[in-house]
Length: 231
Ligand SMILES: NC(=O)c1ccc[n+]([C@@H]2O[C@H](COP(=O)([O-])OP(=O)(O)OC[C@H]3O[C@@H](n4cnc5c(N)ncnc54)[C@H](OP(=O)(O)O)[C@@H]3O)[C@@H](O)[C@H]2O)c1
Image 1 (cartoon, rainbow, N blue to C red):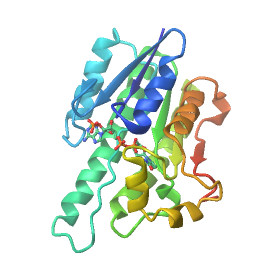
Image 2 (image 1 turned 90 degrees about the vertical axis):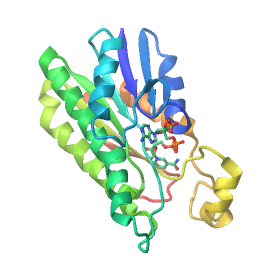
Image 3 (image 1 turned 120 degrees about the horizontal axis):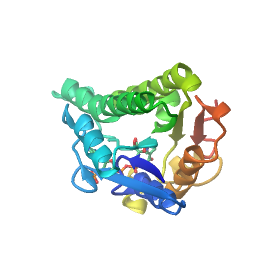
């Protein structure tokens, strides 16, 4: 039996990931969100540790794969009085909580003397940057990519593999309204593929990384952005 913890699985990309992984044989998917699945608000400093402990408990003491997907994308214009607080909140949810879960996963696998896999959902913003209201978001995702590479290099010899996925604009939530609010046709004109990514495309990539991706791929960062940013 393989046990996979997926954070932020209540909706959007995380829900698609949980669905895709749920079709694997002999696999248990532990879902998480703020108020559903294993509930934990990752904006709270102690939440990642509590989530990991609860997940381990439900899994009978063994977790094989961690998918860090939970994240927030909240605008914070330079003029905002709470700019620093917004920075801290985005870093806490997107980067610090993910890092704490990665740390606990690595320690868990080292203690058991087994390998494991980590898949971190970063963003195109890690490489391309983001809007002036999203310094924090881009920085958190850039940090996630650097952390993933560090884990890959540090623990490959122990069979602990780490991958990052960088989606571009992905259609989650209120599709048409959301797209329109982001500039509609102009946004699509920037994507050579002519459309945004679907959560299922991201999920298929994550499923591959959790299962068939060869160990020599560890440290890889996979883009899913319709060639809107090619590096
Ligand atoms: N959609 C895109 O265009 C896009 C592009 C690049 C990267 N990404 C990344 O992909 C990931 C998923 O994005 P999405 O578009 O699917 O997001 P989404 O639809 O907004 O869903 C976010 C998920 O994260 C959870 N979450 C948010 N804040 C949380 C908190 N404080 N504590 C615990 N859980 C929390 C949410 O749980 P609740 O339901 O409980 O709030 C939800 O399950 C994120 O890391 C995002 O940065 C998305």
